Image (cartoon, rainbow, N blue to C red; front, side, top):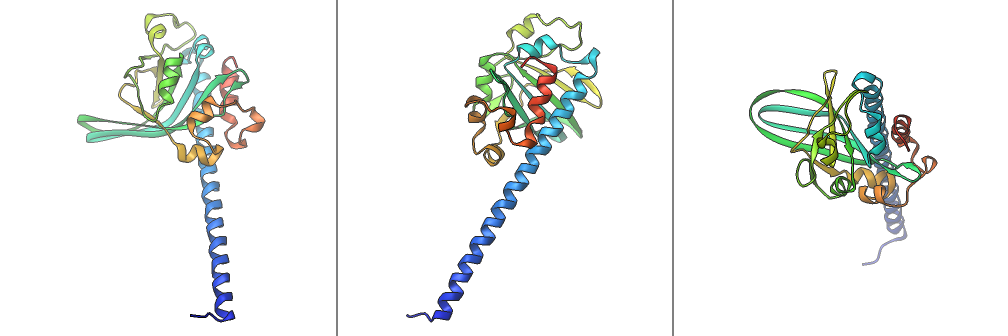
Length: 237
């Protein structure tokens, strides 16, 4: 069957239009993900700043200075009606020779069962204290309190940072709900990389962001720089 010049022209124009629409959709999707990344970075930086500015209840600086990596999960929602579930998103930066790394994006989730009702939002901060804890986070799914020990971290300037719990634990956890900031063992939660977001922002998966050649601040996307800058303000680089 032969096509007329007009039919071929219409077909070519339709194909071009489809390509333009596809490119615009891809661009819009990437822009939306970059906006999500910027929002997560800003929220995590705000949570960490607010916690550290209450000196009598802040994370001891000596622990921050020893941490291999720091994770912040703002506004983790825990909702329950008989069955319970929690979920949220956050960032993790690793200490490198050049300072705190570009933050990789992660999800946190988990579940529970029992006579419970209601919903709360909680901010979580995790200090990854050794290579074992860091290795666990780089897996596709990592359950807190499994093979890697997790303990409630001490707070305040006078807190003893050399207890057995902090020395033995691979991860120290903290939480803030309704204004109260405390050390709280977050056992049973599962952390997994949000690689859709990582690949949209960096073109890499979370593991490559945290273990690959470190980026300087100027090499990071502008929207996420606030998080490593905030960590550097309160701890050794």
